[in-house]
Length: 153
Ligand SMILES: C[C@@]1(CC(=O)O)C2=NC(=C\c3[nH]c(c(CCC(=O)O)c3CC(=O)O)Cc3[nH]c(c(CC(=O)O)c3CCC(=O)O)/C=C3\N/C(=C\2)[C@@H](CCC(=O)O)[C@]3(C)CC(=O)O)/[C@H]1CCC(=O)O
Ligand SMILES: NC(=O)c1ccc[n+]([C@@H]2O[C@H](COP(=O)([O-])OP(=O)(O)OC[C@H]3O[C@@H](n4cnc5c(N)ncnc54)[C@H](O)[C@@H]3O)[C@@H](O)[C@H]2O)c1
Image 1 (cartoon, rainbow, N blue to C red):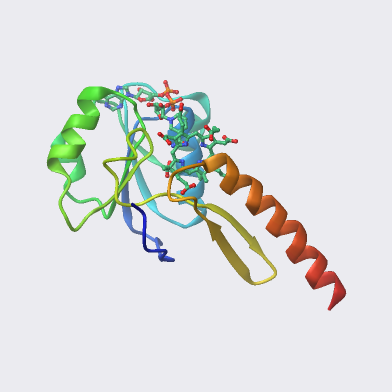
Image 2 (tube, rainbow, N blue to C red; image 1 turned 45 degrees about the vertical axis):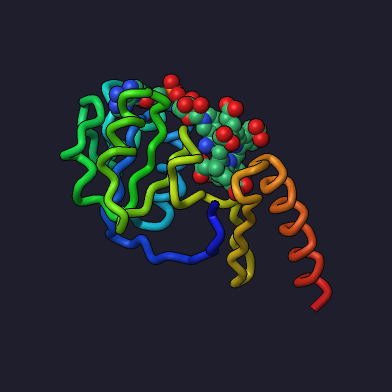
């Protein structure tokens, strides 16, 4: 699972996020930083996602997940936790699409690592899905170490 690290250029790439709650919001913020073209599909969205929608930073399809919405996506993020949405995604995802299944890690083929960008370095930490909190912790330690290293130069 998640056995190949890769840095992508997501600028302008179509990304479909299924779900617009807490977890979706975290993923959306990262995707926006990367310049992705984001469509959120969800019957309701959290205040933070609504703010992005009102500012025109994401599109919103106010509906439940349907196979049609997934077809043109370069990357699909599954973050609703809804069993029916998860079933549709599992059945309709094409082998050439990337799927970050934040609500169903066994199904996805891509994970969001813990990342940091500092002084020209871009570091990504994954625990192959086993312990995201440990990935976050190591990221913070690496940030401190990198800052020390750069100060000493
Ligand atoms: C790194 C980070 C990136 C991001 O999401 O942006 C990320 N999770 C983060 C935080 C975090 N996630 C969770 C906690 C609570 C503490 C804990 O339980 O550990 C915390 C800590 C916190 O929030 O502080 C809970 C959790 N996460 C997943 C499950 C499902 C499962 O494992 O079954 C559950 C249990 C759900 C439950 O039981 O309810 C699954 C995934 N989370 C991943 C990424 C992928 C694997 C990454 C890897 O290879 O390590 C993967 C597989 C899929 C994906 O989402 O891509 C981000 C840190 C950002 C940063 O600060 O840098
Ligand atoms: N990957 C991670 O790091 C991580 C961490 C914690 C939880 N999770 C999982 O992520 C899932 C979502 O958690 P949350 O806290 O964001 O939930 P939430 O309740 O805040 O949001 C759920 C969202 O899904 C939408 N939704 C519901 N049914 C839908 C459907 N059929 N089609 C499309 N959208 C639909 C809702 O409108 C809402 O926007 C849960 O399954 C949870 O277990 C993942």
